[in-house]
Image (tube, rainbow, N blue to C red; front, side):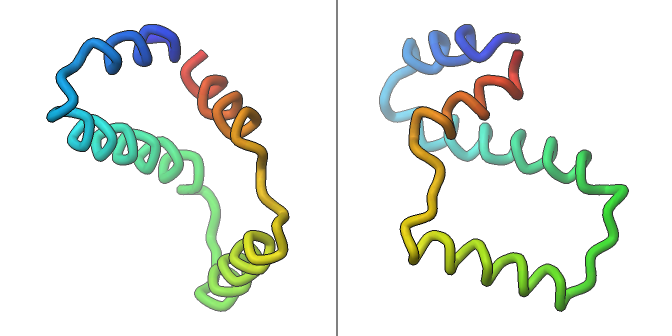
Length: 78
């Protein structure tokens, strides 16, 4: 299913369903990320360091612009 198709289908849902849809999409993306990460072995120390680096980037304003973030998500469905 394409990104555009998913967006159109989500737009057609009642607003009361959007929280559940959001949770489901988060779950699907999590599962996808897990499948891509399964060959990686990362120690807790490396994970904590990477997490802290990401938080530091956010605090310093080093974030991905919204349109780039959506483009990245869209490419996952292409």
